[in-house]
Amino acid sequence: MFFSGIELTSSIDFPGHLATVLFASGCNYRCEYCYNLDKIDTKAFSGEEILPRLLKRKKYITSVVISGGEPTIQPDLPLWLETLREHEFEIKLDTNGSNPQMIKELLKRKLLTYIAMDLKSPVQYYRSVTCCSSNQKALLQSIRLIKESEISHEFRTTVLPGFSAQTLLKTAWPAYGAARYALQPFYPFKKKYTHPSLKGPATVANVINSTVPELKEHFGEVLIRGQEALTAHA
Ligand code: SF4
Image 1 (cartoon, rainbow, N blue to C red):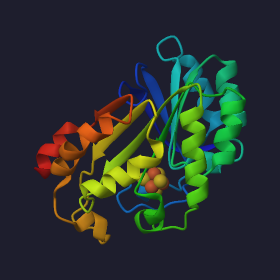
Image 2: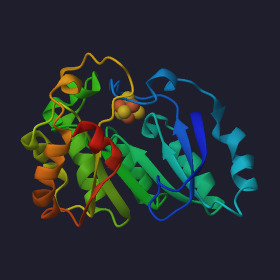
Image 3: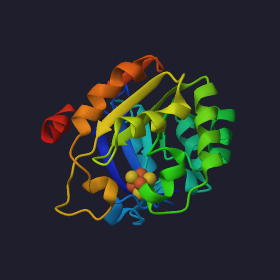
Image 4: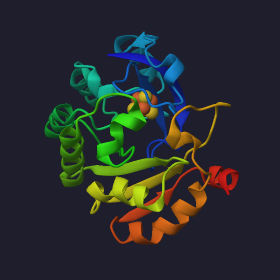
C-alpha cells in the first residue's frame, strides 16, 4: 500500500477521534476541485515504512484515517488494514464509492470503525464532475452497502457553485435513510476553473440553506462543514 502524504494529528477527520490521516496514492477520478490533484499519484512512502512511526505515537493516537486519492484502488488495502487492526488501531476509510467489491470485503472482514463516502453529484452526472468514466450501478451498490452496514458512516457532498437546490437533493437522494450527511461548500483555491459546475453563479450558501430542512427529514443528522466558506459565497 502506497501513500502520497500524511497529516500526523487531526481532530476533524474522524468524528470523536484524534487521528493520523494517511493519503493513499492514486485515484480513478480527476475532479478539477480536488485539493490533492498535483500530488495524487506520488508514492511518497509505503505502509511498511510508516508503521513504525504510527506505533511510536500510539500512546497518543490510536486512530487512523485512510483517505486519498482513492484507497480502494490499491488491491492490498485489506492487508494493510488488517495490520493496523492487529495493532488495535481504530480505522476510518474515506472513499469515492467506485469499488463496491472492496467495500463489501472490508465490511465483511470487520476492518473498519467508520466509513465516509463522497456523493459528488447525481449519479448520472459523475462523468462530468469527475472528468472520468464512472459506473452508476457500482456507486449505488456502494451506497446501499454502507447504509446497510452496522458501522458508523456518513455520506458527504462538496456543494459546487453550479449546483441548484434540485441538483443537491438529487445528489443526496440515493443515500436517504443514512445516519449522517455532511455538506461542505466548495471553496476556490485556484484563480481559474474550467469546469462549468465550478464557474456557475455563487449561490452555494442559498442552496445549502434552502435544502437543509428537507435533508434533515431524510438523514439522522445533517452537518455543514467549513461554515467560513459559506460567508465567502454569500
Ligand atoms: S475522487 Fe477525491 S481524491 Fe479523487 S480526484 Fe476526486 S476529489 Fe480528488
